[in-house]
Length: 524
Image (cartoon, rainbow, N blue to C red; front, top):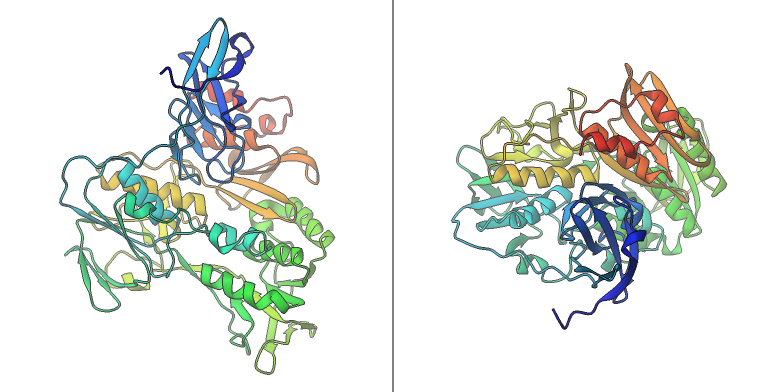
């Protein structure tokens, strides 16, 4: 290793066990960790959005990004869980005369495909779950044929960015793909874009495409996501009215608002609120219409919802709450929206964000669909052996709540895609991840873990609206979910504790002196 370029990282005596430290080597950020088995180092920037890993949560030799919860193995730099998709890079470490030296992160090559396997695994859906599953199959050593199918004309892309940075004009279209040109070819993943699957025969193991072509599979993952709901009011089909779900939707909106001055957003959910903020950054006058009395109160509760409302109002968004749209009018294109209270809002563009429905119509008659969703077991297998489902369409049991849930979050879909891939390869381990998502509201990113639903107690650390805070939502004395602003390590610790099935009493969550991360020592 004589040709290795070593960078001095500091004195070994200054490193504390379990406390990551960031240094720079070869112009790149490196995180150094002292553990019971020695020193380890890996790339220090999360490969998702570049979050500083040294500020994240360390559990054993796994470090978790403080921004969006991606996990990396510090010994190898290998990515373990999304939303990051690429390894952080492995770094060599040595100690000479009490001084620690490290190398810059090394880029990992594509996983080798060894042995022979004549099986075909088909993945229907090129979103979060489908892409994660395809990658995981290769990372886990599957040597057979992988066919990743998407009805969209694009390779898998970063959907959460559409309502956030892309809508604000901060992200360009070439930022959206999850991988660069040549990735799927180098990983030997057959990517079929613009191909819609119209039928699936689980007994025969056959997919049928819109053009009549068929594909035989040994195992399949269905991860077709959801389609946006639309309003049933006059004028909603006028030019200038949009739904936002796909990259094509976002690009069409982006082209239309270049000369627009006034926007009406219908819906005060995550999409509506994020889009409202994004369009304000572009200088548009924005009115948001929704039947809700308090935005996002169903998920965050009244206090956080009221605070978010105030933050958006400070940014210039005008709200019309407790009201619904009655009609969209215009001559050839949208010009105004009439509301149920008689108010008329001028508009150059209307964007509807009122929720989605699972995309399962092509599965009707297969026996896989029940009440519009696809029930799965703890391995994500459907009622048909060898056929799995993940993401927005999947209704799956939770080890934590003892109930079944369908969660519409990007990272959840990625986790489920990973787990389904391992199950397709023979793993019988039950899924135990706890839902995580983030949302950009006004100038603040809010992180959330757990399961939205009825709660009978709310515990708050800090004060909502003042600096950093953490809110826990309890049902029958048990933590059901939590949200935070600027308390990233705490929210990650809660997620890991919930994953392990641990109880977190409300008085502990509220106590500013209680070290939630310290409780993890009992589950490592």
